[in-house]
Image 1 (cartoon, one colour):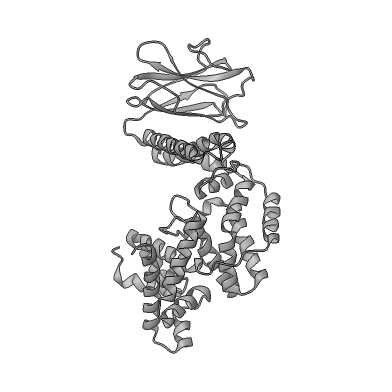
Image 2 (cartoon, rainbow over the protein chains, first blue to last red; image 1 turned 45 degrees about the vertical axis):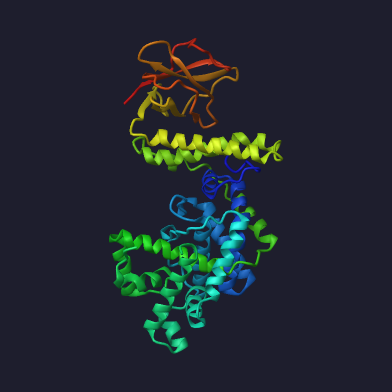
Length: 182
Length: 256
């Protein structure tokens, strides 16, 4: 019922509700909305298009099979999909079984990214915040997130003290948060 | 955010999945006990999502969509009635959230066909949306109002029993009614819901026909404000409805 309204912009929560009712067209709409971000994150982590497509399939099929893993009342769907895609891609990279229970991941984000214009502006701000970080800080953050390296592994790789790496990661995430909460 | 300082670094690392063994266990244990740190973890996941968004750009090939939809088609699912059953009658807030979502969807869905013909009149549509948003908010207020009186209407002997639930706020004359397991009704007939006042004649409170699963809803029918309800009742009426009941109630319930 919810998703069969082509001229009405359904909210993510409405589409997830419809998916819960078995509405495959709602699933198609969610895919249209968020497959690029899920694919992009997986591709960035894995560097391989076929492997990224597998993660894309896995993440959306999981939402179809069990939409209750995402709690629409408590978090952002694009944020959740992006974080789940990253976690699954890292698991795949490290050839390990999924470590986190996806329903335990709640992603709290300020901006409403549903519309294209908002999305472009948000993306610009995020990239600008990353660009304004020092190179070692950005690098520590990206190694931890996109390469799935632990702080100890980053310390070994860069030859810097463990405490420094921890601080850089924490401060880097703090800087990103300030993008939308100045 | 008053996050425990000793966990501040570790929470970031935990969100990244970088902790192992005892360190991970210690954070998990603390999270079970500390709501401030759980909230901070949710925000950290949000920070990580922003970092993830920075990678956006590449688009998946068209075959990915086909692959997903083929997999979805192979796994059709019936509506998850289990979830519905979890709605406790007494959990008004749970109801409110679910019903507000349904109501917004119903309202938007009803407006859809109209919108198709009126794409050029976006300004008017926007006004309508505002009106519907107000209605949805009013609905939410009805459901969550401490003044709301709940009426449960029960009939029949064989399971699954038809059941109706009316939530009514006298001062504003607002009503939400939901029914389940209602028997199918002939095309030329409708169920009609009645507000039975403490004095005076029954007041029509909406027509409804159950869907294939026997579920039905009447949301915010036009009712005069301030009428004290003794009960709500359902009769079977001609499809266009009646201004006064023409048959005996098949279901009735008093307030609680």
